[in-house]
Amino acid sequence: NFLTPIKNDIPKGKTLEGVDGSYKQSRMVSYITRLNYDYKNKYYLGGSYRVDGSSRLYRDNRWGSFWSVSGAWRMIEEEFMKPASKWLTDMKIRASYGVNGTLPTSLYGYMGLTSLRGGYMESPALVQTQIENRDLKWETNYNLNVGLDFGLFNRLNFTLEYYVRTTKNLLIDCPISMTTGFNSYLMNIGEVKNRGVELEINSRNIISKDFDWSTTFTLSHNKNKIVKLDGKQTQIVSGTQIHKVGQTFRTFYMIEFAGINPDTGAPQFYTNSLDENGNYVKEVTENDKEAKAIPLNKHAEPNVTGGISNTLRYKWFDLSFMFSYQFGAYGYDGWAQKTEHGGKDFTLNIPSYYRDNWKKPGDISQYEVFIEKPTVAMTGVTTTRRLHSTDFIRLKTMTFGVSIPKAWTRKIGVNNLRFYTSANNLWTWAAYDCYDPESVSAGTADWRTPPLKTVTFGLNLNF
Image (cartoon, rainbow, N blue to C red; front, side, top):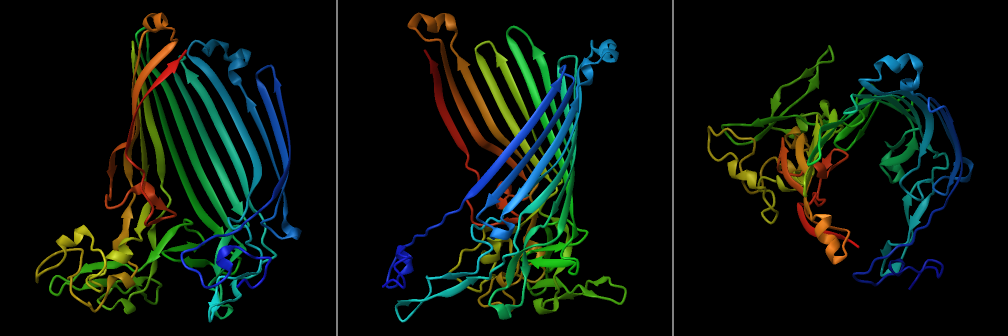
């Protein structure tokens, strides 16, 4: 019972059970050129130019032109640097500027689409699923990067970079009138600017015949803000976040939780109404309808990320391990939006931390009385109670190995024999440990599988 023989994927018909399927295709064509020049291992110039065409955009906007220029000066090779060569083993300054493009994630984002999945009276039907936007085009990123590389005593190597990344024609889902049948529309609007620094330090701590130890430390700091939207709007609310001119792109936006009434166990909220001076009035209410969502001074982007790794070798034995870290970001617990129901639905799961909920007058708790059909069910209120720091330090990887001496293995025709055990995510400290901080995506913790703790045993054998 297919509506048309052209579209004959199984779910396009009706009267089916437990069947799914889809058909997608896209095309991209790229023409790339690159030129690099090196003079006496001291002066470097580079340039690139590319043209990309993608079927994800309408034919009038399908092609994008992108380019970059770069240069570097290896100062250590200059004659005037010779007196410092005993302790300064490397010195290079470099810079680059260029433009690249980002495509919409949807393969058919510009098309007006209908779906054959809808149905009526056991027959297939056409349902509009997307509004046409032929003006959709490449999101463009303008990147400036300045870097300094230098080494000391042939033991310490530093890489320091500063960058500015300006994104224009930002691809954003903009709210539109519900009279269209949709609540948002993918458009190219706005400009976002990212500034940051990145530092990498490589250290050869100990070098000897029997024992080596080296360390690598990385640190990145990034700060972004929205420069403009469409020129008229100054903010766009998107779920638990707000995109507002002058603020970080993923700034959180929700009702402020004011705690639990110690006398009744009812949840409380701040009204956050505005006075004549534009300041928020933080009166406490138990009626969530009286509380207004506001932009918060918390965002989903970390202020600092990085890691530190060590590699050690002693005779036959080797050990390597790496810690990663992140500070300054927050995540909204989307799973708790379902489970913090306070008794609204006894068939749903209950978080373990509800053991410490309010039970009698005088109790101080962050969780309301658990009672059937509460006056305010927290599943229907998006509040700061579910907003948590995603700061963490994690032992990301660890490997221990034993290499059998070649004098022994060559007797059996083996060049190299090494036994090893490797582990991932062995230990984690997290500011909030009810969900994995690395399972947060775009500021929301949901039902995705967290990084697994794994241990592997193996051997490397070379003949």
